[in-house]
Amino acid sequence: MAETPSGQTFSPDAKIQKIAEAYSLDAVDFSAKQFGIKLDWSDASIASVEKVLAQMSSSYVSTSPKPTDAQVMSFAKAYGSYVGEVYRRNHGGEWGMVTLGESRFPGFRTTTSSSFWPWRRVFNRITKGTEDNITDYYAALLKKR
Image (cartoon, rainbow, N blue to C red):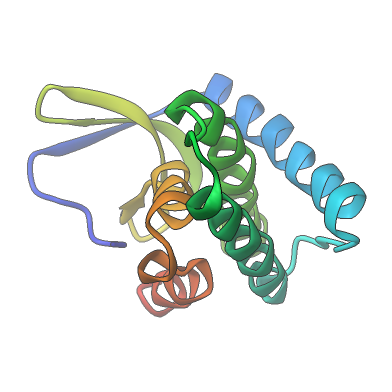
């Protein structure tokens, strides 16, 4: 979850940082407009993110046909970026590109050099349900700092 696998490399990337900042603002706006929830960049606001994602997951499960992965990923990028930005603003760290084996994808590195992938975790929360609870995930990240 918050562990950095061996063989993984991380490259800071200012472009990914700017993208994550913009996506996170989308999550703030969408939460306010669609759910009446104010996200305030605090660690405590992650519980509100979980409430939004629980509703999205419930909708995902009951929808047929299912939204495409690209449609789900648009929300995963917004809310995953918010999770990463809350961590960065309150505890430090940086966005960049993670290389793991043959795969390369956006991720986040903490000040203690642990890496995590909030976009993927939020995607899993929406599509797989409560086993990928974001509040629990974030609490585990905080314990590792």
